[in-house]
Image 1 (cartoon, rainbow, N blue to C red):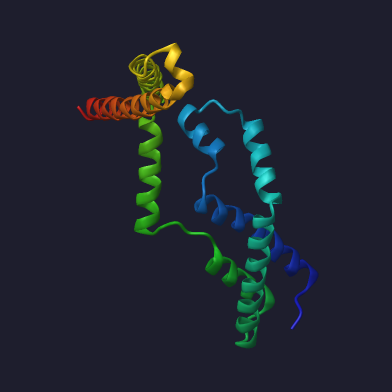
Image 2 (image 1 turned 60 degrees about the vertical axis):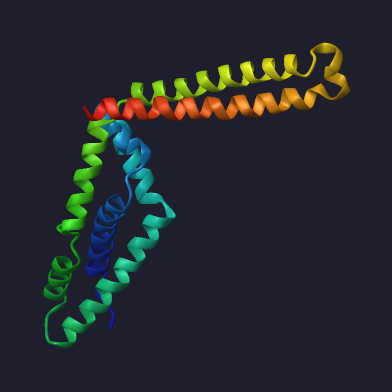
Length: 191
């Protein structure tokens, strides 16, 4: 059974519109998340992102799948006696994107809550603590290993192993202090 050109174009247009919703529900892009948090991306950038999304291979695949599902469903409805236009309207209603599940609503709520509470300065502070403690740990460990092995005279005669062990021990201690500071920052946030 073949559809008229007008109905085929309507099916393609509907699939193009609806596949975008399904893809948006499936995954937020990093820029969309950033837009949600800052609210400063212009409508021009948003429009360009939408164009890119609608041209992606995944989007085209979703559109083609949706066209097949709609076509099969419409053929069944037309075999039951509905006109082509009636079958299209019913298929359109049946395949219209709906995000009404409890899981979907909960996930969207958690995403929104996460990005509302996201504080980049907190993550930067955590990274700086790790880097600072690592720097101090490695430096102090290397110095203790170097001096403990006998200094410059003994370094080439096997003292470098003691220095290397000191560097590794200092790095591990630095990571440990970084983890402690990370925990303190997280606990302070909860207060």
